[in-house]
Amino acid sequence: MTLFSAEVSWQRGEGSFTDGKYSRGHTWNFDGGLSVPASASPHNVPLPYSVAENVDPEEAYVAALSSCHMLFYLWLASKKGIVIDSYVDNATGIMEKVDGKMLVSHVELKPSVVYSGEAPSRETEEKLHHEAHELCFLANSVKTKIDVRLA
Image (cartoon, rainbow, N blue to C red; front, side, top):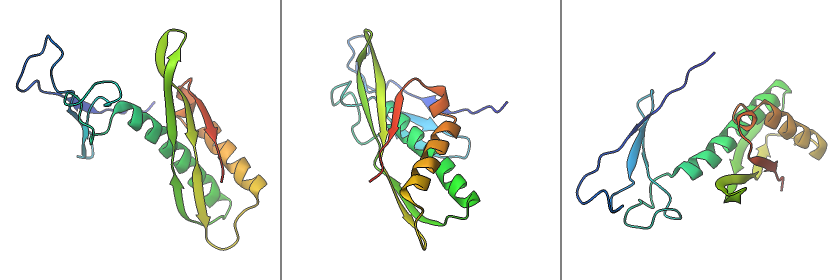
C-alpha cells in the first residue's frame, strides 16, 4: 500500500461568509514543497468569489488523468525501444448531470506524440495507448468514461 497526501488550505479573509460572498481561492500544498493556487471554477462559482487564473478541481482531475496515461505510455514505449521526443495532450473533460448528480462524465485525451526516428505503426500506437489506459491507476479508480483520440 502507498499513501499519498496533499494539504488544502483556505482562509476566510474579509467580507461575510454566511451569505456566500467569500473567496473560494485556496492553496494545494504538496509534500515536495510545491504550492498550487486553486479555486472553485468560475463555471460553478461566479467571479469575484472564484479565482479564474487558479487551478480548479475539475481541471486538475482532467490533468491528472492525462498525466497518468502519459506516464504509462512513455514507460511502455521505452520498454519496447520506441524513442519519444515529445508528448502533448490537449485533454478535455465534460461535466454534466447524470442520474441527478453533477459529475465529470467523460474525459477525452488527445495525445500528439513526436517520435525520434521511425514512428510505430498506427496499430502499435493504439495498442500502447490501450495498455497505458489499462495500467493507469487513476483511470482504474474512476467511473468517468475516458477516450483516447489519436490525430
